[in-house]
Length: 222
Image (tube, rainbow, N blue to C red):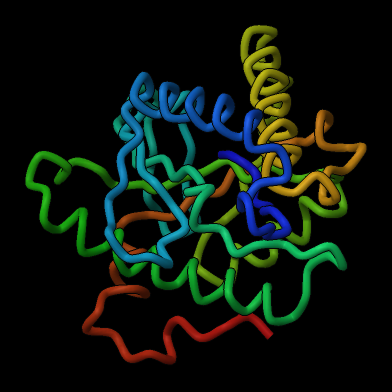
């Protein structure tokens, strides 16, 4: 999943380095097409895109849903252009609330999208890999996503060499995106980001985020 961060706005361009932004986001678009990552919502505050992927392992979720290796899953990716900007002073409570509302909107939109696509009826699990700088931050991410019903299941064995190289390449891309959008937000640990693997059954998703549910079911994290 790609990092969030944004630029200090200037009169000329919304990016810190427009030429780099053009190149990096063109590469990002190419990767989206190659991986068949789609924009499942037209809502301007939707924070995720969607990729139909295959599970790389067998897992049993807390609600009893068994995810088998090779089974199709809905994998979430951050929609970089929709992530609220991080200003020079860092993240704020207002920014955090924007993210929280955006996640709730995104998941409600996902329920509607999946219900409208008969060819996705077999999708039973939604997952994502949230980039995080440190193990302590990973626990914070896990806590935040648990509010939305996601459970975190860390890998029991080290990832294969090929997967580690892929993640390192993704970290480079994340770093370049942050540099292009908001150079003051670039951190030294970006290249060492770890992944927080989150999972949510489609059944639980629908129970919590169906538009028929009361608004209290998707209240903000306090």
